[in-house]
Length: 181
Image (cartoon, rainbow, N blue to C red; front, top):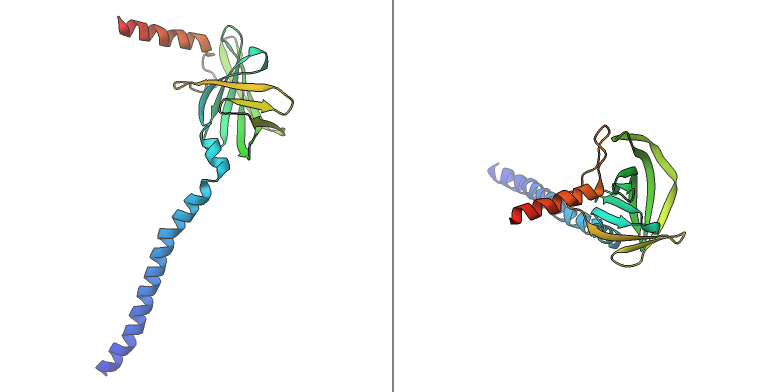
């Protein structure tokens, strides 16, 4: 009887060990494959654009674009004196060398306060071709020049004071100058 138990238990134990090994291998290998698929050339190209950018558009208009890794972001427009005039939420993605952008929601300044409203995504998609590491050309011919990254830019919230792009730069340079004294 003892011999029969040992013989019948061995295949069961072997099956359990094989199932355990297979499960362990799947959970070890599967994330590696998933990570490899996440790093497509389009996503690698998009990753280099993630961040807050000072952008100059056609006609020297000043813009701040916030591009997030999850494909969302914001674009803000400023007058020549640096005062925020408008903004909108964006959804962006790369397809080859083309950046496809949809806009949604609006933001504007009224009496020095930010007013934001989201009414849904626009049905229109704006397409930009990436010219080089700093320039995008819209299909209608307009060019966006990404000037520099803005490390401390924060999205203005509804009800907050309207930001001024140049006062922000002046306060940074004044802080730097006073720290140097």
